Length: 135
Image (cartoon, rainbow, N blue to C red):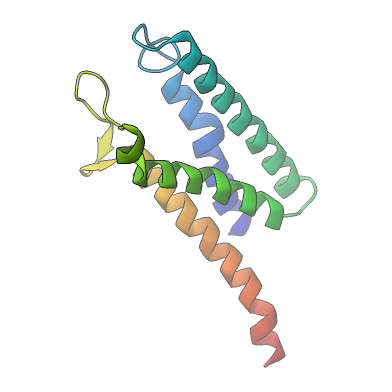
């Protein structure tokens, strides 16, 4: 279950986000400055590279803790940026006012929120197992 949870998280930030952002709304958005675009592409490459490392850790090295922490940092950082969006003028809405949502919730918040909770829960369960076994 832990490997599947981590892999779900990785698929979201290392594959789904680039698929959703390598288009005219993000990377090729004519309204974005070249400086903003380089940061966007950098973030996509960084997150996808970390995702590859995490997959290697989980499935080849059979090590889940570091992969979990890295995945929590990536998904949690997005959630924190969303919480802080009013401080820096950020938004999940496109320039035309539309937003990708499912059941009225932004898909980024829904997906990364679920991934963050699932990975955090699996880490906490692992850390509580030794305590329970000692009692």
